[in-house]
Image (cartoon, rainbow, N blue to C red; front, side, top):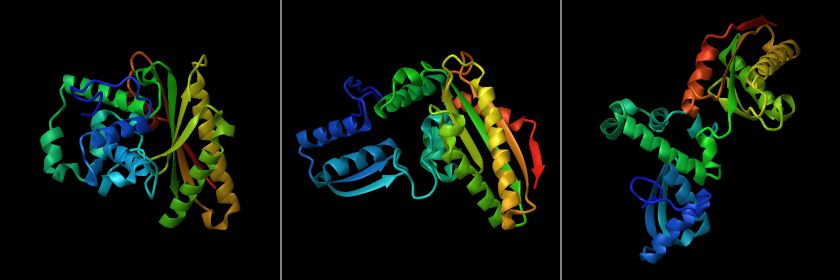
Length: 272
């Protein structure tokens, strides 16, 4: 019954998850479902939460499992569009190798028709989340820059504190440092990710990579010289960037290209 998924036709008027939630609520009302028990999984968790906010009387009990679009109590929302469909599926399961249902459905290498169907469904999700679907298929070229600060400190708690402060300071000043149209995120345990439209600046990724490297180094140097507890720490900074192109046509491919550049980057090694 999900519009745009499987064999169900899409609904052109949908422009947000809230619109889809309203359509689901209409279906429940028209078919006489009242005070139902709901299990919301992934996108369904987001939909269920929207429906509960708009019309709580429709539900008796509700459980959300790995819901999209809802900020977790710790960390950040996992970005669906910075991962390939198989990677995202694996990320939604705590232990895929021990989950019989996952292995049965997704244990084998997906076929090309499956991958294409998944990407079409993801594009529909992208559109329902309020974005232009043409952007998902590369309508707007953008660059992805990853930066990581590997810190070696006297204690693990000290290392984690340094990394946390560096990332928080970088994200907090992202608009000023990198430009108002640049989106900055925490990526992984010690990484920062920058996403920026290219417009007419084909070299923007290189410039952002240089800025990010300099920013991380500046922060680490300042912290380790001004905070007594951080004194003596050493660090390695690596940066990798990738740019949307005809050869890299999916967000997952762009992420892999940036990760590969990060892995092969010539690191900047410093000590306080």
